[in-house]
Image 1 (cartoon, rainbow, N blue to C red):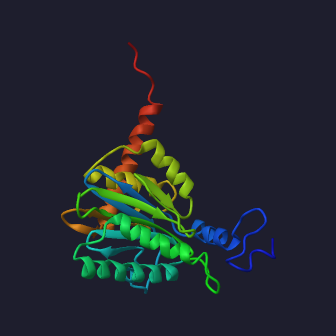
Image 2: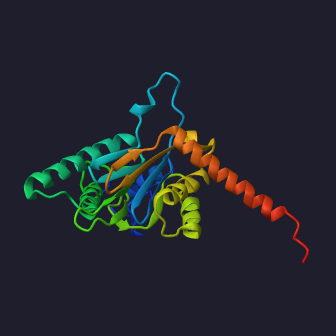
Length: 249
């Protein structure tokens, strides 16, 4: 194997590009990120590590705007993410200047995925070590959308998805519990999914909500704590109902 994992452009005899697989491993070691699409809202949530006491937590954002109607969350190497985000923002503005219309969510996803794929096929570079969740509203139909890209350049549309650490556990939870919801219920589902793998409750979670009318809004820590407390209360009530003896007829 050692002969084939040195160069990005060389396939191994069994058809693997090891550098791309190592980049996927970097994603799996990154913070968990989840996206949920509702009928009138899209929600992004990420796990955040506790910041040192003297650090300004506002300077460590894992959910960012690409345009007024599009946002991105990622799992993996943050320095790689910064480069990709800047390139995507420039493309959004360039598209506005050229055709005088905002980009669609699918267009900017294709652009980001194309950029990631290009870095798996060129000599002297390495793949981007991150996977992205891209959400937004179509500027023509007003429909919400959620896409995922990975280091290989693959992209796909989802109703709800997760990436990063423990993403399989979160995805299983979403498969069991996802329903077409709107408003607060969609936010609650995203937070419930993250709480499956994140310890310490709401203080280690960053959540942003996007609506067609108001764009992206980061939830305050107090709002997240309130929803997390509500979820815990619902869980406790469900457990108590299970343990209660059956009523006699």
